[in-house]
Length: 385
Ligand SMILES: O=P(O)(O)OC[C@H]1O[C@H](O[C@H]2O[C@H](CO)[C@@H](O)[C@H](O)[C@H]2O)[C@H](O)[C@@H](O)[C@@H]1O
Image 1 (cartoon, helix red, strand yellow):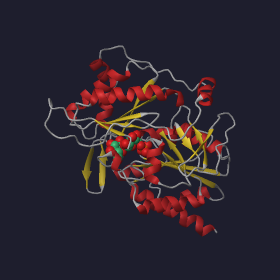
Image 2: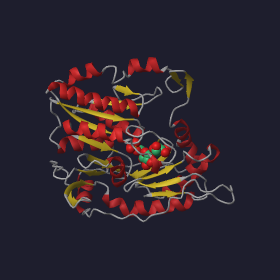
Image 3: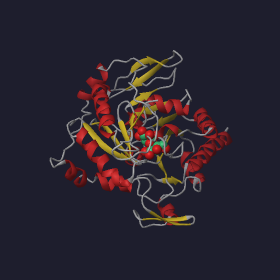
Image 4: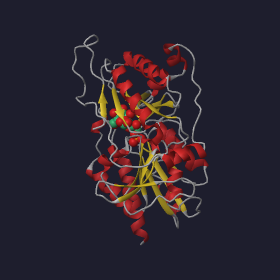
């Protein structure tokens, strides 16, 4: 397990730690050279400049909107009204919202009428999409029924899992060797054995997987690994007295979970994280579902990973390709945007049980609807044979 746990402080509480997860030292199972990735980072201008506020720590946390973002995550405040949920964020009921983001199940035939004669490429987020959101990040298992659905759909369409988790971890959860995997928010891409990642401009490295078979890797942030390791240790140390904090090693990025932290201590979490990362101008912070995510300042995200995979698969800029991306999180918006506005026109499908604004075209309520959608794709494809 690559999950680190913050332990309860005897000064703050007598409760036991929420998890027994231990601090592990990361091991790179797959050897690779970072030289190519370093060169491409510099040559292709992948570096971003992130302006930092020069205020005090508490002021910085407040003025940068961290706390607002932390409070509004997962899910946005909502008023429950049986099947119809009204979100404070959009002011819309769920029914109204689905007029803007129609259900991909209810409009399945319409979507498939666009897909006729096209090759579908499928991109699936993991947490909240293939597995339900749970309290403990290391217990976010997908059901065997969902695994079968993903396995079946991958028989007909190239399928990639695009996750904020480390690639090793998400591979462990999904367990299907025939898929493409993009871990660390797309910064760690691996082809299935026997498939390549041929890209016109960006070079990949060849490595071996657990079965000793050759796989292609693309890791544009590999030069940041020593820095990420250092920051990981600092974050574990600096948050260990806050009950419920978990610092998760996602290889090229770090997640600081506050789902199990009392809300009154969220400011403290934000301050401690801010204190650590403010001395690292090459790192930036993004927000997920009750999680602060720290990542390198390269111009790379889930959207870039989708474009990279389409290009590597020879499916970019093709009139006869329909990419579909299913995801639930803010970080999936980068991919929705790429499919909405970029040359590789496709459909983003937002998984959400509450109304929220999105760059997606369609919606699904939860992972069980995602599974139905995957099954429907298979039935549709089989019906064409
Ligand atoms: O890109 P994803 O595959 O959606 O990963 C995003 C983050 O997912 C995980 O955290 C989220 O799910 C946990 C399990 O349900 C939940 O406890 C947590 O509150 C959520 O934020 C994962 O642990 C993170 O590392 C990923 O970045």
